[in-house]
Image (tube, rainbow over all chains, first blue to last red; front, side, top):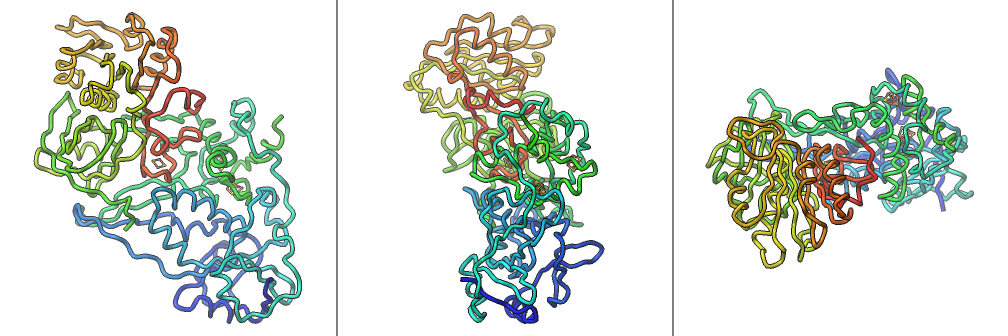
Length: 312
Length: 264
Ligand code: SF4
Ligand code: SF4
Ligand code: FES
């Protein structure tokens, strides 16, 4: 059974839950973004930030180790964090990230960040943008707690034991969990293997600029580059993982200069197929949670899910 | 720190110049286990890592061919005997040497692509009773680019080494042309044979065409793919070819498993 939290109790609840750590929520600054907050009053309950919560788990520039000469040292693990107000497309994407980062070569930094974070998702009452198709992605809904806006109060659904411990003192809700996804358009094909050929993608292919914005805003895009960044000694420094994108030409450059996905179309196709085909073949669900950001923020508004829907 | 990011230092026992800008490093690696076809991420401190494939098969030693084409490999090539190479790995699947047993192993390599398949040859030589010998098809740009000269001399004593160069130079009496042409002229058939190929994509594709006309089945052919592996652990995405991660699912693939790849 779910819990009930009066809206005026939210600030106290969040402060209690994040004691000893930091509290993060969506706020309006130059744009709507997730950042550390002090008070629930700062939270913006409308819309979905351009950049999701991916940055708290795989930061855009993430030092994964330090080196002094040839000696490797660990880096500090991030503090306990409570993230409030992330939408399901963001929280669900973490299940996909888990597949890569907790695979046969588990990543300690990511694991610690996951363990140290409480996910308090906020259900969407309506589609946050016209391009979203989250409802059709068949994701079960991953969160520690889910907040559903009920006017004067939140209906709070419990997703995990971690969440359960935090809501022990809240009253039980009188109703059952409503539909947690807003109504959105749908992706009508979940297997597109048969459509690898260039001819199916003619329009999108001509439009794409290879700017990589789509993968920067995507909560599920995880590709990174690795570089050693040195300090003034030129001997000591950090190994840094930086967001990278398969849409960029040099992504597949090998020693000697050969580029494997040289044609722009091949890169665009890899982007789409990794999301809607390859990942699912390996892990059983898509590397896309249907948030629509990649379309909304594409300078050419390339609506590849629409292309998929129209494939014959 | 994440265990799988840790590198270990190994002492360079010798460094042999193979040709301009290409060196064979021999490392003392007590207790380190690896298979031909696998690769290591080699670290040049304060510069970065580069994926380098295994070119040997030997207990307590590891050999790697390094070409000075990028920042990392340029720094590595400056190291000398007594210095240390920092490795993490091995990564990847390697050649399934057990499955090759009771076959003759045909080794096809072009340019620096001879490094991974050299490991296969060394494995066969270390276990002669399990295999029906070796035959080589190697191609290089010109005679002065020929790599592994020492080994070629050794191999010539025991088996057939077919060697070709793209461009003739004074003093070269051997064949001139590409590896696929060399294959075409040879009389090999597919009876009890396994083929290990590594080299530029064009060479691999052409060789496979020729091998098929000679009756080889796709499941007799093993190719090693080259990609710029950045993590080696199935995360960074740089090595992907369609749904396959070259760093974990490969770099060695049986040809029939990847022939559908149209990704380049
Ligand atoms: S691919 Fe596009 S719709 Fe799917 S999760 Fe990424 S940004 Fe959202
Ligand atoms: S944002 Fe649009 S134009 Fe830019 S790479 Fe992505 S699909 Fe292409
Ligand atoms: S090298 Fe990073 S995923 Fe394969």
